[in-house]
Image 1 (cartoon, rainbow, N blue to C red):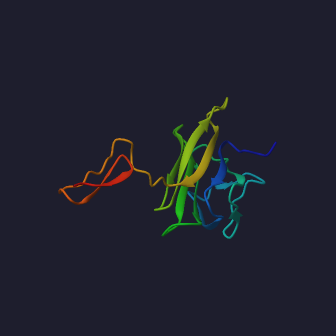
Image 2 (image 1 turned 60 degrees about the horizontal axis):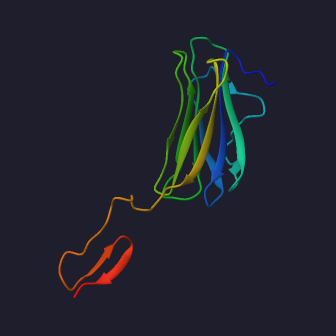
Image 3 (image 1 turned 90 degrees about the vertical axis):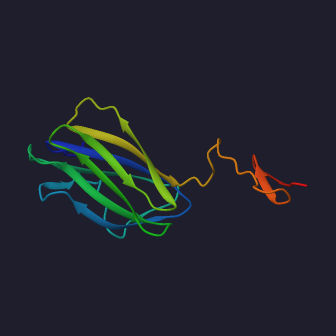
Length: 155
């Protein structure tokens, strides 16, 4: 088992998008943070479509957060970012800031020790489907309208 320090956090990431994603930036929260051996994310690394990877950081300082921000680019107008953090206050979280095409879903995995947390992250396409309750209805007689996904011409 790898050395996970005093505090650590791991993200099991899966790329469920329609493109490979390339790491464009990696930034630790403090100088007290380092990668868990074998779980490094490096600028230029590629997370292939439908592939998975485990990224993890640790700290040996009881007064420091174990945190890192990773930026990835594949589709969309700008990179998405993922901030992973197991804080010295006991709060552990992963935050995804998506773009116009890709977002992410995060689920915490139960672990026996709050100092060492794990999450499942799935990067996926942003849904362009309208919510079920949204229906567009034509405004004026004689114009085309869409109702429940069907197009009709009003007389």
